[in-house]
Length: 264
Image (cartoon, rainbow, N blue to C red):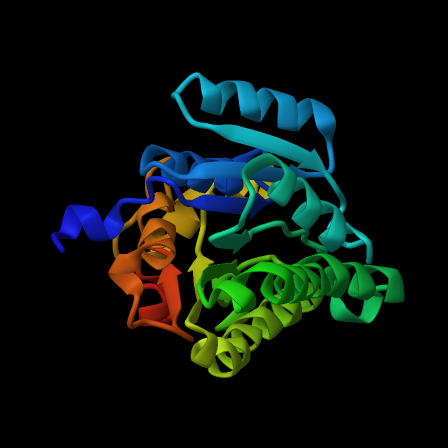
């Protein structure tokens, strides 16, 4: 099989949480460009409608379901909607996330719990539901978890982020990936994780606008991520090109995680 065939996703069905904007929409577009049918999951119906229209404008077969993955019943809702729309699920991308910024001593129980429920528990429930109903019986699946470089290193010195709850949740996602890959490998299910660095999104726009030059200087590539930088990594993990890869953590960060402190 040639490389183009290995990366081809024609006929595959991908569920993408947090897929209505930002990195979620970028990677959903990439999956669709490679031939996948896409089920977008997000909380806000108006944003889902806009994203669906944008993707259909590129010729992508897309359906949507409004659901808050922090809610215990959301996984069933999402799985039911995907099966009704497309009949199966081949790829699950756990991208939905939230951030809580506060000094640790001022972080509330509600903030801490929100980070765990959105960033970890929601992904766990979706994996459990789609795994037991679809992927394990079929003996096939590609799960791509989206964490963060905040889950594999501390906040760089000099940066004004107070993100202990967020970083802890993303660190949990990293090791959840490794553990699930070990358990579900015998079912022929690949589980991998992509950790984005600094991309401009709705959640990060304020701090990137305020500290853009400083942030870019931390990366050997001397820039933040753009609208194309995230697609390839997710497509690789979602495709047969990564059929012998599981439990791996890939940072897409311009090189920040391999240099500390910032280069001169």
